[in-house]
Length: 260
Image 1 (cartoon, one colour):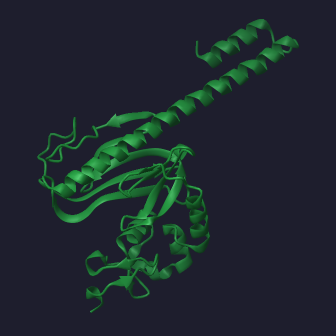
Image 2 (image 1 turned 120 degrees about the vertical axis):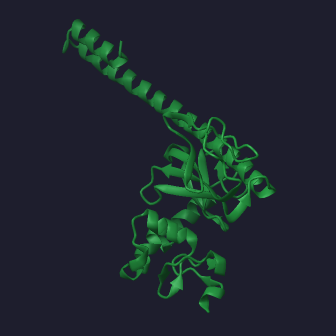
Image 3 (image 1 turned 180 degrees about the vertical axis):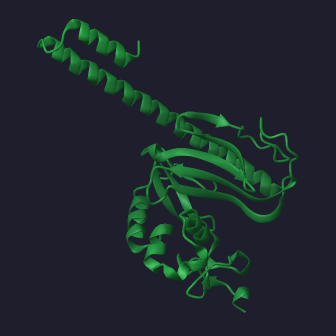
């Protein structure tokens, strides 16, 4: 039976082991989890995949020839200064990050500018534990306890096992508006065990990086806003100097721009 065989995902070509297969098929072959998740999150009906062209589906998941060439060019220009367990790469000099396309195949990753990062959240078994990003403080805490508790988090009963731990990153990018960093994808991982502790540690490191990036984006945004205000004031000062507006009009506009 095909369910017991390893086969290649018809969309991205990644080898799919028997226990990694999903129900969705294309041309009679099972999709990998990553492609199924990306297509589903993009609004594609997994039941009627046959109604879509292969090139269309590959563009959605980022495996079309054009997107691959663009991605690999960006990767060739990417200088890895930090590698967080193969789950996140950082190019500090060029202010870029790299997020792997597939948790099982970390050689290929998407490259984004710091400024592309909008927000992020930590999700455990479908429940959001913490969120953060541009213009917002980290809500819910980011430090995982040995039992999986989040500092300042929920008072609900805490499960002793975890099936899925991921970080969702929302990005200002039409091709990749959302990327998932999957740290745990396995049934009943004990929170007291080394696998969960290691994943939690990496999650903390990733969140710290994303918080630093968010802070830099906020500073850059405020700086740009200040520069824009200064330019506006300069423009109205020039109008004042040539007599196009009165001193009173200039003073009123200046107060408005400076929110005095």
